[in-house]
Length: 399
Image (cartoon, rainbow, N blue to C red):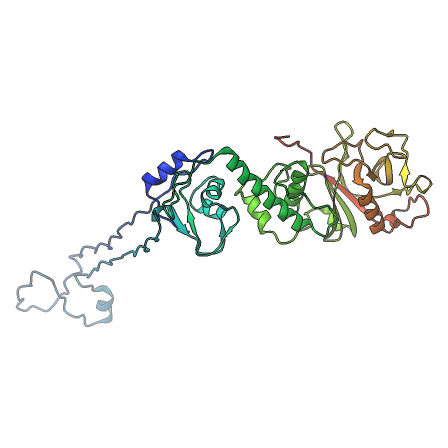
């Protein structure tokens, strides 16, 4: 998309924009293409030798050589003059838009978004365009967009626009978080994880889900907010399905991928993801150890205690007091296990295990076919699942 921005108006708009930084607009200058210069004639080859005769005076404008009589002369004899021409190019400027200030308005030439229009016009933050144009969602082909925010005027119709207030900016940012939450719910639907509240509040649960989406989409994993108009937000909104994360885990017939950065657990078979559950891994000093396709080797349904195994190694904590602290644990590395718990925060708070909500652990155990187990089993083939553990947790900067 191209636009012609008058420097004085654009600079005034930049100076008035509140809480938004913009890059200067650029203009295009046409350049003239010079014709190629003719090479000077070589006196040694410009005259063809003839038998003695009377030579008429040569006209001052040009010298015409006598046609050669042999093939050799055809190959070596050249005329003394050359012809050059000048090519004239012209550019037809598009007709101005019928708006208050055509230099501050562009027309979308295809279905797009205000984020893309901001990037195409060197605007650093699309929030300003949201506020100037009164919307944050997609732009249809043919829509007119005011690209001079902060100049206190609607450049489509000339009506005054009040200065951007902080509460208005925060409202626009909250509306963008709602868009993210809605998209995340769409992508994670059908994988067993609860929907996020679409409330515009980017808390730790939204950060956890953003991190899981980044992991699936092959982006840098972090639980931080996505910047409006960023490439990663564009990738999120463009996604139509949730890909299985790239990992050696998928080399197994059935697998679990625990990511400590996101505090998220992917469960699947082969190349397909079946479940995505929130988890809480080991806290500092009790970290869940890194794994690469470690086989689950022990499952304890704790049938004599309602599924709760009272571990003597990790005593019952105040956050999980019901009849023991490990619900139907599936062990993959010595005393570390995937188990149910009554408290599964979006941060590392366990004593080395990976916690799941009780309902999620029941779903996982049933998927493994262990829900009908009559007692504890140590048979790896019966469990038939491997575990990968990766990543490092980094707390949110605004937490």
